[in-house]
Image 1 (cartoon, rainbow over the protein chains, first blue to last red):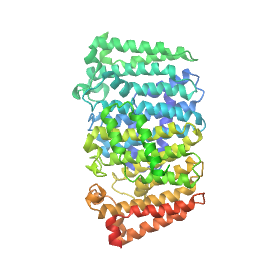
Image 2: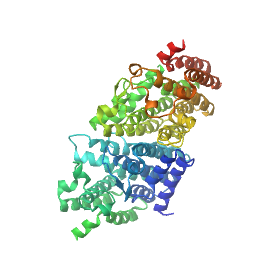
Image 3: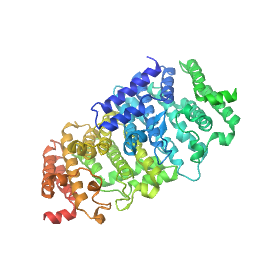
Image 4: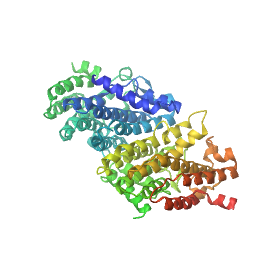
Length: 289
Length: 289
């Protein structure tokens, strides 16, 4: 089964457990609305790609980790779109969750997606109980305090924002968590994968900053220029356009170099090389060409 | 070490892990502000009391479960107080988290408390890995979908609210989770404790409804009459004052009767008998006397 099918199946399974009774109706509908159809599923693909590169000795644990990572990513999107943060009315070309269901259901949707993530790991790893604690620990670190995505979002409430720490927490942490969780699921040492995830996450953040500045509303399905509008740090503002593109390329090369010796190292290198093409906005590809 | 000290120590430990770096500053401060000083710590006391009644064979796992339950309870309070739900400016006699720190930090505080709960179980049960999956599962069920506190809160967004299902999810679920987690931590069968937790949770909900109707602002430290104000179901409205008090007493007796045969059954019966006195608001004790 290919990676995309494994991801969708894992998410469907998690949602089935949560919404089987159909109650309460709006929350069930909002959870499904949030997750399907999905975005690029970048983080769970990274998680499963690392697991495959490491031999994929425990596919159920890898699928659980990938599912948890994507559930947590979606939780952060739902909460970040809310009026007290970005106040974004659109996400992936449709109404954001609070715009479609109201703020109370949006807040609860984010909450329950976090719970579902940890429930998924506990439930799906019942037959590999030695994986549960390290998976929970690495995933918790990626989303919580002091270095996870919640901490990253909280930096936006500070007046003095440390750019690198902010980006690493807000974006790179979940990439690092995804890569390390993929290794842990197979019983491999996660340590060498920290650097791979961290660099890919940083590259993704730069790409997102580029998209924020350059992309038209229609292309990315959400209002552009959010960083400027909300006074947030942005790599293009810091490095300039050419500098940001060059920085992104350097980060991806660094990620590829950091891939440790493992059964599927070569195909993972190719995969990341191809994957990165998705990161460059069409507008920019034309600009840079 | 007595139960209260174990609870405070467990919470302090969880907060230390999350806030050791002091970053990001406001989120660290808000997490500590939310948890200390605490309320009555009813749910973690139930969890530890059940663990003690079952022999407390694994105190670290019991402490982890009690800590997780209290972190999740506080997460729900922070989010429920927010403007899109109760819009409560006070909690436990001081400013609610969003009133003190703003909505963004309040939302993130609730999120990170959920993450911390699951991280705590994973971290503190490293030496008892067979406890982790069942503890995570029972705790997840108590807070998630379809029957946990998030689902309970989501019923408030529906037009047709099933009173019993709503109360069971919104309040009783975490009592049930606390009681069952206490048993699971010791390696005991959680099944008999479902009924104990469920009845105590229902009793607590009736007591809360009574307090909502009767108590003066000063006594409970938050605005009273929230249910009426928000059009929520309330047991006093349903049963009348005398009927609600009698219902509460019946539920507590039912909880005591449901305590299964275990080493500390007798002292747990006495504890619950004493505990219930906390549940009756002072105003009502005078009214009923």
